[in-house]
Length: 246
Image 1 (cartoon, helix red, strand yellow):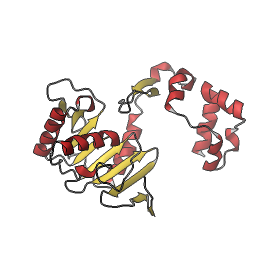
Image 2: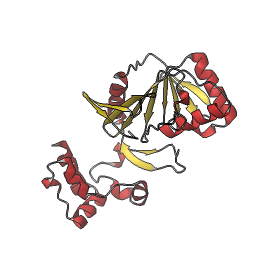
Image 3: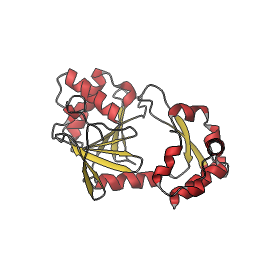
């Protein structure tokens, strides 16, 4: 069982988890089902900040680590370590999900994410991603107006962003009376995505053509048409009718 092996690795190689498991009497070898994990406390952002070094696995050399930070959309960035050159796994996971809703690499994306773009327009083209990258750190009404005009001019079908950034983008456009770009799909990640019965609150003022909204969190794939409430949640081949949030 992969989960049990990972927990045993944490117990033997990660100082933070070694101490935690000892303190609460948790034995990874006894894990038989996901519900056994309820004995473990949630790993929150502040715990990561306070225990960053102790969360490193002792059997992973420094040369194989790479340091990342979040975009800071909630007001403060969070730094953490990952495996160097392991990003292809996450990317393969994400693109597999995206392709289920019609994503194609040869079509453009608008990436409204945590990249600082310092030119006057605050956007640039990244040929590696086949995407236009827009800075979330310069989202004044004037700059966002320029973003929307460029996205419409290029007829970009996908918006790749954080839920909070999508809502901020939508709010600015609505306040200025600007019709949003007609995205086909919103590729959302890094934050939980909540659908609200009020279209304004769930950011579907972006829905010039009623885009499909896709969110990836942990190993879940969730999508819903913006006019669907309660949202339809699909996981693999199982459909489930959800309540107020995905």
